[in-house]
Length: 509
Image (cartoon, rainbow, N blue to C red; front, side):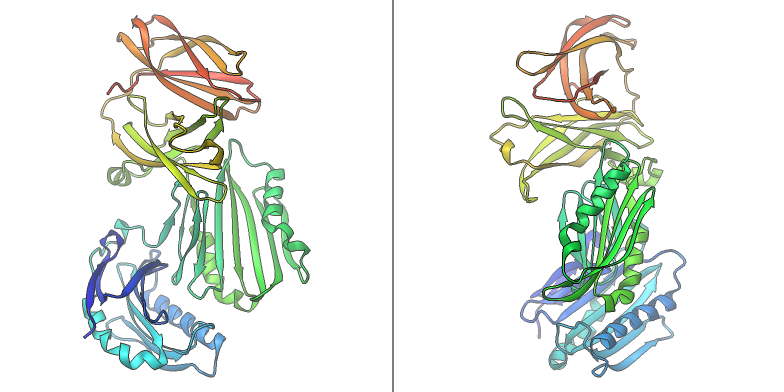
């Protein structure tokens, strides 16, 4: 008897008993278990939320036909269909022998799948044909042990890929998985390794210009256009928010590949996407490509619904463009705006600051907590951090990512912001920017402390950097009274055209 182990899927969506030496991998549509001793023996347990109003029978039949179409494409002579029908219970039962992946041996496949509450459920077992007799006896055990723990698809994200920084989400097609991730995007690949889809989202301080979109398209194509056998099939450069090129090019090992590159703009976001597959498989993967394009959701500025805000204290809180530089003392300086798009006030907002080198390798992390007492709905706070050199080597840092961790809903309204009256900005002989400002207590209570944020802008109004401090005032400031404050931002900083000063009530714990 093969020793079994109990496996509970992420977010507790289902449970199943599988051989204890089989490893689990998240793939589009569910979890794939793979035999350590024979990688061609695998089980996929489905849990795949579908769009509303999906016709269950039509979807199941189409997925069965896609699997068989792949086998016909690889080797039509070897395909043998043993069973392919939907029973009165609504279960698709498919069993076939064929070459479902062109670089793998002849395989035996059995599927039992059904749809409940618009979720695809079920199992798919695949083994080399010569190993089927030894593996098939565990099939009844797999079927009996598969239990759905979370029947409501609205309670889970399904197989949506959620970018770590919250810039976008995209639904992963069935039998696709994550090939590579970095701080601004992801590359997905189908299980056969024949097709890839990559998406990258860059947040700018301005709406992308046509020149920037042209440059992004050119950079994505690179030197491929100079390769022998390069063939351009389509090119679009005259639409305001889209650049597109489709081409074919021979590769060293894999024959000819067709690639489509899209560069798009959405508000201040510059989005690049790449889809690649062999020309003979292009139509086969077209539904997957369409799903990927149709399900990309970019970060927006509308408040999440009330239930989402109840369930997730970070829903609707978004990090803006991260700025960093090394100052004259060799210290790293980091800042980023954080906007509250919720319909509620928040407090005790915390985040991790993650540092990466030029190859995308993780270097170190630091923690941060909001210095303001309350961040009002629709308002912006500013993260600022200067980590010690002992924590991270500033010379190695090539990118910085902000990962929000937690926040609490604030029951109170924020204290009225201090009023900026007047101020000056000067660069001292060390190259530091010295800001002096007069602030007025616009509230109705005496204040002993102030949260101060100094914002530096270029001529186009783009934020260059923001520094924050929590200051103890030289004396209690009564309502309506003014006070002068000072802040020094370490140099060197260039292209500063204007500045602004924000004053609010700080957190004192």
